[in-house]
Amino acid sequence: MMMSFKTPLLVFTSFLLLLVFYFSPSNKQPFTINTGYFSSNNTSPLFLYQRPQSFSSDSTSLASSSTTNGDNESDLAITSATSSEHTHHREKLTSSEKIEDDLARARNAIQKASRTRNYTSDRAEDFIPRGPVYRNPYAFHQSYIEMERTFKIWTYKEGNLPMVHDGPHSYLYSIEGHFIDAMEDNTNPFAASNMEEAHTFFLPYSVSNMVDVLYERNAGYGPYIRVVADYVRVISEKYHYWNRSGGGDHFMVSCHDWAPLVTSSAPNKLYKNVTRVVCNANSSESFDPKVDVSLPEISLITRTLLIPTQSRKLGPDRPILGFFAGGAHGDIRKILIKQWKDKDSELQVNEYLPKGTDYGALMAKTKFCLCPSGSEVASPRVVEAIHANCVPVLISDHYVLPFSDILDWSQFSIQVPVNKIPEMKTILLAVPDEKYRKLQKGVEQVRRHFTLNRPAKRFDVTHMILHSIWLRRLNFNLPA
Ligand SMILES: *[C@@H]1O[C@H](CO)[C@@H](O)[C@H](O)[C@H]1NC(C)=O
Ligand SMILES: *[C@@H]1O[C@H](CO)[C@@H](O)[C@H](O)[C@H]1NC(C)=O
Ligand SMILES: *[C@@H]1O[C@H](CO)[C@@H](O)[C@H](O)[C@H]1NC(C)=O
Ligand SMILES: *[C@@H]1O[C@H](CO)[C@@H](O)[C@H](O)[C@H]1NC(C)=O
Ligand SMILES: *[C@@H]1O[C@H](CO)[C@@H](O)[C@H](O)[C@H]1NC(C)=O
Ligand SMILES: *[C@@H]1O[C@H](CO)[C@@H](O)[C@H](O)[C@H]1NC(C)=O
Image (cartoon, rainbow, N blue to C red; front, side, top):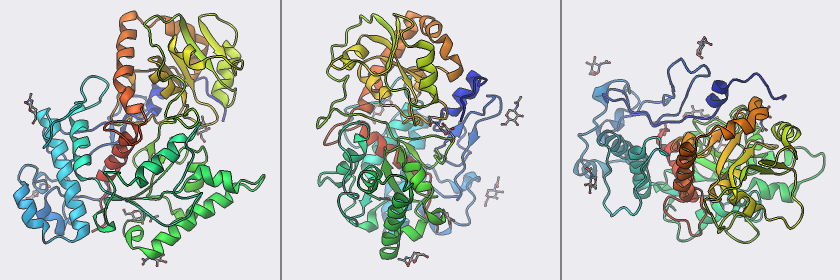
């Protein structure tokens, strides 16, 4: 598609997902952890995603959940559900009712935290998310606490190496392999001990590894589509969980560019309800932010957990105004390179740097790191910039930013529409020092959410990905 030069700023920003926790101030609304977009002209109200099925937040009405009306306040026993009541009722619940009961309790707690602007936890909290980088820090914090307390994931054992139970651990698609490992690690605190207690189910195949193993010139996507469809066929014949929800409480994870296409092309709309956690989060293609999750792209240096900008000296002295280095693939980069390559000493736009150039050091000396989309929407530069304490400049169309239901990206990045690329230098120079310091402080604050640890740590990238999945699961009910 040709890049449109007519796109006004508002339209551009509207394509960035502005997901919010939406809580009615009067609590008369049904609880909805909402995924809403601002309309493209920014005048119509927030579009609120309503859960397709109504639910009640009180275990007593679970049995009649198919007839309850989520719009009616009396269906929401928000404060009446005490834990002793729950214990009493839980004994009579089937395992799938227990699952829904868990989720209902979590929704209640999140709603309460948002209302009281404080959290409830049965342990000392070592990190309390606060500040403008969070859309609703109270709701997020409680939701995170509830996830740790409740969320259980079953990782299917079916399938063989190398296409299942493994993935890449270095370079562009690293996050895929590391996430699969983290899920299959014996110490994973979110692992369900049996299938009955799982709130969600993980399909641990790797699209990247499939491409490595099955790639054939001119063979198209057919081979990968067959593998992902086959995987579902096997597990859906063997267990009843897939059929129970049409895959709605299942997820897959892949950073490969082709993952959205491969899964959306699987026969019979097999993947329609599945949460797809993918780097190529292009809302103009099959990616649906209500159901799917945007996965940060993290390009690790071989066999390390480090990216090129980590463990750099991060001085305040930033002699370079703006910096980019990379191949001219994709329409946006072509425009950027054509316009700015070798044109300006302060705004340094390069194609590939000469061998031996210290890319990480350059980013650490830069105020604004340009992160244009390439052949797909995501770029590893976003996370690299964050680790270089460099304010990311996002140049993309239809990119749903990672964790944008939790994080307010405008507090730690700048978005420049594609049609404003010619004005890039003016735009960057116009950012006042005070604003820059705030943005940079925001970058520092979110860094923990973009850091990969093995084993995973609280609030790090792995747990933030899980939290995104948890939020989608809170918005989905098993059919009664
Ligand atoms: C604004 O958006 C709404 C909903 O998308 C649409 O109905 C309306 O016509 C738009 N108004 C303008 C001025 O474009
Ligand atoms: C809510 O439910 C109650 C009891 O079922 C009913 O009397 C009332 O009219 C309902 N209110 C609305 C707004 O639907
Ligand atoms: C918030 O909750 C925590 C833990 O329950 C408590 O220690 C703290 O005092 C509360 N803060 C406020 C401002 O209510
Ligand atoms: C799930 O549905 C498929 C297709 O209808 C069917 O072949 C399969 O046997 C079902 N699985 C179970 C466990 O009943
Ligand atoms: C997706 O889930 C809904 C219910 O939640 C179900 O009606 C629908 O059939 C499912 N879609 C597929 C393709 O299974
Ligand atoms: C996003 O999807 C649209 C629609 O298919 C496409 O035109 C555009 O090139 C995609 N963006 C990138 C960066 O690939």
